[in-house]
Length: 393
Image (cartoon, rainbow, N blue to C red; front, side, top):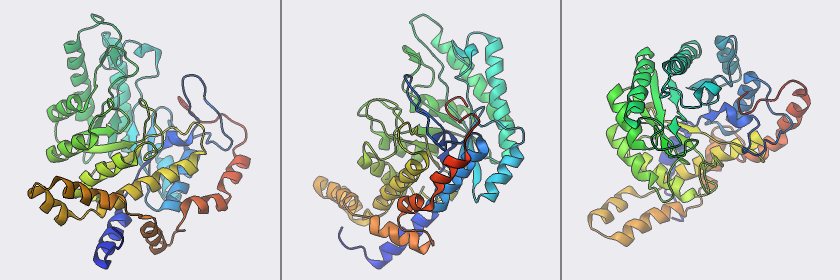
C-alpha cells in the first residue's frame, strides 16, 4: 500500500488517537536474570518515582495514561495519596497485580498448596489487593500463579484445581461494581512437571465458572513455540472473555523482551484480530498492558519504544483493506487474501504516526524528544541514595 486515501487516513488517525496502552511499574525498576541484576542510575526508589517515570512515558507518547501496580512491590501507606500524585502527574493508577510467588511459604504453591494455612494466607493477599483497588479506583485485579508441582505423584492435580477454583471464587466474590478479575496463564516456570494454570483453556474454563467479570489475560511470551496466538485472541474475543494482554517478546521462553522486537509480524497479526472485532476502542474493555523487563537498556526510553512498537503494529492492522480481504476469503483466493494482509503489513506507517503526534501537540519523534528533555540526567542526580526499586522491591 503506497498511498493512503484521505478517508482511510482519517479513520486510522482517529482510532490511533483513542488507543490506550498501560505500562507496568516494575518495568522502571532494576531487573535481570537469575544470574545477575544490573543496577542503573536514576532508577526509582519508591512507587511515587515509578509513577513519575510512567507519567513521562505518557507525556511523550500521549497514549499511556495508566500504570499498573504490583503488590507488595508497590505497597504504600496511603494508596489514595499515590493515586492523587498520579493524577497530578497526568495519569491514573491501573491494574493491580497480586504476588503470591515470592514468599517461602509458597514453596509448594500458594492458593493450591496442600496446607490450608498457606492457602488462607495467599487468599488473604488476593483480598488485600482488592482493598488496594478500592483505594486507588482501579478496575482490574490481575492474577498469575506460579503454583505447580515438580514430580509425578507430588500432589493431586484434580484437588489442586479444586483449591484454585475456591480461591478464585473468594477473590471474585469480593469484587464490586465494574471491578474485574483477570486470570493469566503460563505454559511453564517455575514448576517443572505440572503448572496449575498452564494454558488459555484452563484460564477460560475457570473464568466461565466464575462469571462475566472474570476474563483471560494473554501474555504473548507464555506459549509453546509455534503456538498460533492470534487464534487464541480470536476465540476469546468470540467468547467475550479476552480481558487483557501482557505484551512482550521472547526468543526462547518467557524472555519479557520489548514487544515487537522478536516477531513484529506476530504482533501485527494479533492486532489485526483486535481490529476485526472492533475491540481496539477503550470502551470495549481490553487492557493493553506491557509486561517487560529492561535488564540492560535504559528503562523509560525502552518503554517509550515499546509503546511506539504497539502503535506501529496497530496502524498497520488498521490499514488492512477489509472489503478486499473478505472478498478474497469468500472466493477462496488464498494468495490474494494473504497479499491483502502483507500489503498492509509492509506499509511504512511512521509518517502517519508522526502526523498523529503533531495533531496531538506531541513531538513527532518521542524517543528523540525524551533524549533532549534531560529527564534521565535529572533523575540520575535526584535519585541518589536510598534503595533502588527492583524485583521484589
